[in-house]
Amino acid sequence: MLREKQLKKLADIVGEDNFSAEKYMRKLYSHDVGALPGIVNDILKAEVDAVVQPTSSEVVSNLIKYCLENKIPIVPRGHATSGYGGALPTHGGIAVEMTRMNEIYNLDLENMTVEVGAGIIWGALLEALEDHGVTIRAYPSSAPSSTVGGWVAAGGSGIGSTKYGGIKDQVVDLEVVLPTGQIIRTSNPPPDLIEKISKDDYEFFPNASTYVWAIDDFGLDDVDLTPYFVDSNGSLGIITKVVLRIIPLQEFRPFVASFENREQMFWAMQDIMKRTKPFYLHFITDGFNEMLTEVNMPTHSKHPWLILCVYEGSSESISQEERIFREIVSKNYGVIEPDEVGEHEWEERFYPMRIKRLGPSLAPSEVYVPLENMLSFLERAEKHFKGERFAVEGAVNNLGEVAVLAWFLDDERRTIPFLMGWYRSLDFIDIGIKENGRAYSIGMWNVSHSLNFYGKKRYANMARLKKSTDPKMIVNPNKVFSGPLQLSIRMSLLILAVAAVAVPIGLWIAGLYVGDLIAAYVPWLIMDNPLSVLIAFAIGIFLGVAVNELVNIVPITFVLTIGRPFLRLGRKIFH
Image (cartoon, rainbow, N blue to C red; front, top):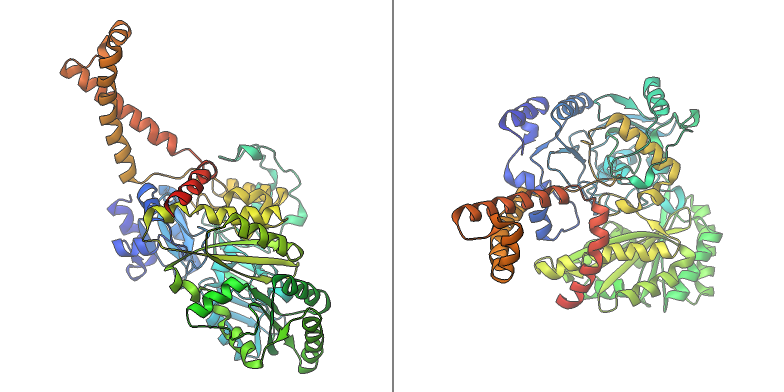
């Protein structure tokens, strides 16, 4: 908990209008789009102590320097539209909400780039660029509400990624405030930073004993640090400005095809990727289609398995692509739906959560799976989650991977079943990995996949950056690099209280059965006078403190690993 003096200083740094320590604001900024079981907030210190909204890079720098001096954790965030825990607090501290840094600083039509503040909304940026006849190559499905910096930090693919790649392929340069408070450009970082990272020999990294090895080939090919900050979940610093690639605004034409079964659909999708270059290739399963009908938002398609294929370019090039697309759909026994169905699905691309009213909650999970493995992946998932109702959709990226998104219907008001159902998100990812897939994003919940997600060299170099600039681990702790969670004050007090009561009771019961043995070896534990009761109480307090300290050094990866079988069993019992 921050002291009043610290809160006042934070308000002075960012300005009174850009600061809040009100209870409702702290709660609002302590979760993301994914609903957490209420008990999690009771157990962990999952609430920030204050919310700040900086208006410039210099303010962010001053903020970080003060937090570093006072060991105050910092959690950067945009609009927190990701559900992987990247914007969740793990040790309290402050939430640094970037949405007031939302300007377009430079539109370079000669080099086809645009420089924007990290807090600008994708939808607003798209509209502004269209006035100049240009647009973004790819943007997230959450574009109406998500920020540019948020998607850069979270990583992943989106609308346009089938042709142009994910967010890492769109970023030219970043302005980042390091955990030291230093402001850098990642494409041209200061030589002293590169020298420090490349010369310092870190033989270990906190709470990552698996990665004891040191990487000594951090050389000249690594002087562009941009790739290390994209999809780093803000763990290496706070992104303040982003330079993105742009393209001329051209015609977009959407087509929808429906199929009787999954085999026909996925075979068609593989052909489409081999023979054409879609701007966006997306599918929904029969289960998703059925749920849309239940919420009175039917696709009106002839068959239940649906693909949306969007082509971008000149009228002539799109017509050529359309001819091949129609041929592929026909060959795979599909039906080309009327133009109005295609236009409707294209307009609905920003609203995958429209099935939420069936929930009333949706528990999401996402994983990359190779397109050629999608049939076996869906069969595995349906067998594994038998008895659970869920919908699946996905979009293909330029590498031939499908970003598969599952929505599990649930009800967060049912505390125990909702908590027990948490395993599904983790299991869904594991099923994808068994099909040669990979985690979609890291955040807090997927931190155990960090090494495979980033690769050995990239992960090690990111660790060197982190260790070099943030040895106190104050910037977004437990994201990318696994670390211990911190119990809430309420849970710590509960453990102390339980231990203080349980130990005297336990010793009293032991005295009834093995009193002679206790009297022979530890007579001061015999519960026969006020002093012995006081001693037992003190022992209980000591054990409670020891349990608290032990829990507070256990990494989240260990907790999730040992806890998942219990969650899976509990779900079967309580669901």
